[in-house]
Every structure is written in C-alpha cells, then in structure tokens.
Amino acid sequence: KKKKKHVGQAGDRIDITATITVVKAVDGFYGISYFTILENSEGDVFKYVGSAELGEKGQTITMKATVKDHTEYDGVDQTVINRPKLSK
Image (cartoon, rainbow, N blue to C red; front, side, top):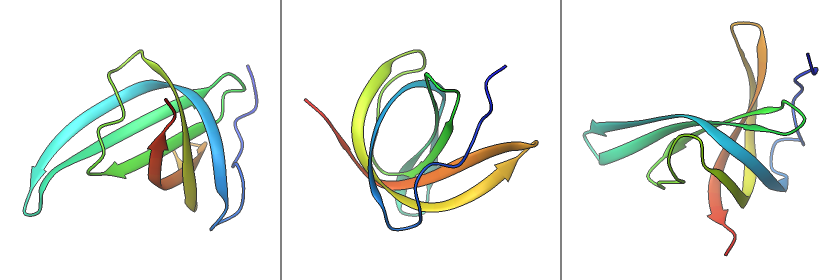
C-alpha cells in the first residue's frame, strides 16, 4: 500500500491529476456546495468543499488548485484545496 502524504504547503498553487472517489452535493444556505475527495496515482488524498463541480465519481481530472490546509481523517493524511481550475 502506498504511503499517503500531504502535498505542498498552505498557499501553494499546485497541479493535480487525480481520480474522484467521492462526490456529494449539499444544498445549503448559500446554494449547492460540492464535497469532493480525490486520489492521485501516488495515493495522495485531496479534499475540496465549494461551489465548483469538478466531475463525477470515477472520473480522472487535471486541475490547478491552492493548498488551503493539511488535515487527517481516519488516519489518512488529506490535502485540503480550494480555488480549483480545471485544465482543458
């Protein structure tokens, strides 16, 4: 099993190619927010919560995003991202 690790430092703008493993749309006070978990080929996990719809579960996408924070969930390191911009 590959070692999952945090990617980048808070504030860094990084390139990510990863597969979407979880997508949930949540209707809140400010409209729909998307909770998205992605995993790249090295096994690193990225979490995004925001208004951008990045794709569907199982889809592999390429994007630029800003590292917001580093967290851990169930013993898995997660890199929290924001301001994603999908590559064409």
